[in-house]
Length: 351
Image (cartoon, rainbow, N blue to C red; front, side, top):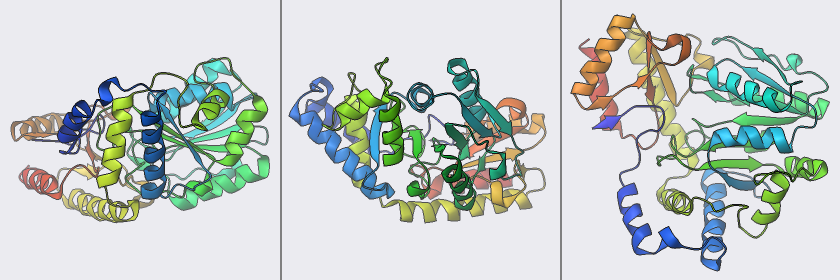
C-alpha cells in the first residue's frame, strides 16, 4: 500500500527499524540537557547542512511544526509589519496569523500562473514572506523568482522569509538567497509529523538580537542562546530529532534527490497533459510544483478515481480549498518509490 497524500505522507520503510533502535538505545527517556542529547543535536545539524547544502554560518532551530514558525517570526523578527505574497491557503493563513499579532501586516494575492513582481514589496516592511511551494495549489516559485524578491529586500532592508514545508529536503534550494527558511518533516523528509525546522541567516540572527524580544518560550533570542550549546528552550521531541538524524545519514545528497524528483514530476505532468479526462490544475509549467502535483477533473470523476485507487491500495491526496472537490493531489516525495508511481499511472490510464 502507498499513500500519495501530501502530508502527513509516506514514511521511509526504515522508520520502523529506526523506532526500534531508538527504544533499544534509550532515546525515549534520554534527558534533553545531557551531553548525549547535545551530541545528537550537533550531529543532526551537521547532517542537515551537509545533505541539504545549508551554509555553515546559518543556524538551525527545532520547533514543533512549520506553523509554529509563523508565531516565532511575528514575535521575534517583526517590529511593525510583514508583507506577504501568496497564491494559496497556507500563504494566506500565514498572513492572517501575522495580522493577529501585528495588525499592520499586509499582503498581495497573485494567480496560479503568475510570478509575483518584486516591485510590489513596500519600502517599510520588516519581513517579506513567501511560500516557495504552496501545497494547497501545487505551485512553486523558481530560484530566479526567489532571487528577484531577495534582491528587492536587500534594497529595502527587509528580511526574506520562505515557507518550504513541502519542498525542503525534496528539491535543491539556494539557502543563501533568503534570510529565513522553514518547514516540517512529515513531507519530503519521509518522517512522521511532530518536528519543524527553522533556518536563519546571520542577518536574521542579528535582527532578532537587535529587537531583543524574550517574552515567550520560543522567542528567537532565547532559542539562539540555547542553540549555541546545541540545546532547546523547551523539552523537545527527542525521538523526532533522532529519527531525523537517522534519515539524513541514510539519504543521498539533495542534488541527487532533486534530479530524481524533477524527472518524475516531468513524467507525471506529461501523463496528465496527454490524458483525455485529467489535466494539471496549474497550466503554466514555470509555476508548477515539483513535489506536489494537483490534477483537475469533474467532481464525480475525482471521487470515483479516489475510490478506485483506494481499492487498489493507493491513497490519493484530496484537493484543497476552492478545488477540494474538483482536484486530487499527488505527493512527489522521496520516500515514495518509482514502483508506486508505475502502479498509479497504470490505474489512471484505464480511467
